[in-house]
Image (cartoon, rainbow, N blue to C red; front, top):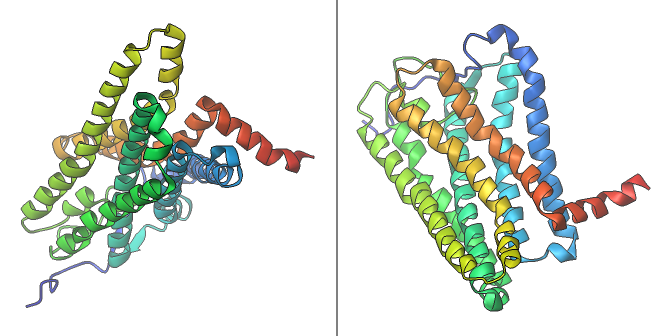
Length: 312
């Protein structure tokens, strides 16, 4: 018998928000607005960095990587979310669900790696400013981008195959309007220990280590800033980190919340699981361009200059 010669449904059924099925058409409007903000805002950031010479610096190259990962994450979930809420078309093919699950988790891990790279950028800029340009060259930045992407896809490559070896015979109804590995595992009628262990390993060795090194970088940054004699200069240095800190919180707080709910909130109301998962996927892509546009004057100026010819 082959490794994948097990019982699988032809498709899964996606779920909107339990108890609000009659209101899905009304919820489609706000969801479309959120997708428009995420896709539009991050596309504007990407275009501003591309066309504005003053933004051709490491900090903004990393920001463009973050915007790209947000666009990719939004595009990975958009088809099934809008089909579920707008058309009540809940069915998704088994293999398509595996692909979406892989992409969602990969782009999420990619965003975590980029946030770590951005913390390294802030560390070098504040703690070793004289060598900033020589440490973060274009080649180094490109190498970091490739490494972050490769880590995501290589680490998560086994995930679809680990799930595909499991028979699914309990139900084919998922808890969300998109496919996530913890949600899909609940439908298996076999031992999921290997999947759980591998999922925990991925969580700790990538997201966990990223959070640790981000925290460590800010400990070193804070120590360096406290050594600056001038209060005005200390505040100026810390102010360059505010946007990144907010982006880190916008990403990791919902992610930790959804992980805790999935692993320890088995008896929590179903709408809690749905709410946390939606916050996890929708909040960072929407907030990141708003945060950097509001807190970074160079980004604001570039966006204004980019749209000024259109108004004329």
